Image (cartoon, rainbow, N blue to C red; front, top):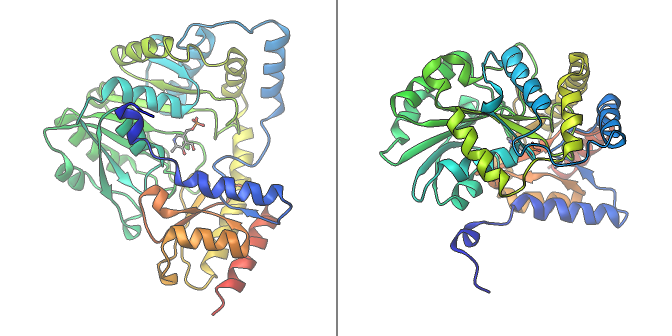
Length: 386
Ligand SMILES: Cc1ncc(COP(=O)(O)O)c(C=O)c1O
């Protein structure tokens, strides 16, 4: 088989191996505790489903403009203005089949052969693959737990070369839940602007935050950074709509227009019915999100307390998203071996840190029932008692 050079660099997701194994075990009737989920545990709210049913009944089932239906783009502009303090007009918005698709499109239209794209580890699993597929070179800033898995503008400066083109930011982060403050982002923005970098700001977990920290969109921090930033978001995590596949971006018009062209020759519009559902989601009462975050917060506390009670495990409370990134160095096992062992012996599915570029950590999703957390923690305590 002769594959394209591009196809040859794409690696299988290490997370998939574990999750599909866990699924098979569950299907075979085994009592697997699933801490691997990358999606909210609750159902899509009824009013969102209802909007989709009405879309079907009304015959809203044909092509829409490739970059999204005008009613949805208008709602997204309003969302960006109200929630993020960013002014985009409709021709700066592209709606795609999930934020993953938005990110992929951006990489395809901005990143050339050998361009360097900077992001920090632990990173979301798809960033390196998207960069490589576009022909670019991932440049990874290692961050440390003692620095809350964040990097400073001074560190960023050291990684910039004359080939650096893009910086990817993800706040709140998957897998660490780390959030950048306004001051930190202002300093990063200054470096990005000075060095003519494009910034991709992946804000998919923007609404799932705990405590008093506020989410800040880097594009809102001034005219210069606005002109260089593509802000990515979507409805998957906030409204428990992972299967509906709606993500979107706001960008300088020239960038949005190129992405629109690319999309018009690949997927065309995301599903018309999902667009109606996403519109309903963006028009939802904020209390729906508040209730969900409260539920997550109960699970977060339970998981953090539980993990810290397991011998050899330690983790900090994440500021956002729904994952605990747990330090397991004291077990002296690499993360893949440990994840495999946990699945095989304790029937607990977790994602190994190596999938996120960080060895000796495991990612525990707390997007599950509290009973599952209690059961999983008690199995871990038993397994690592001595
Ligand atoms: C950091 C991050 N960005 C983007 C995505 C993509 O989300 P979706 O394509 O479902 O909108 C995910 C999903 O796991 C994520 O964790």
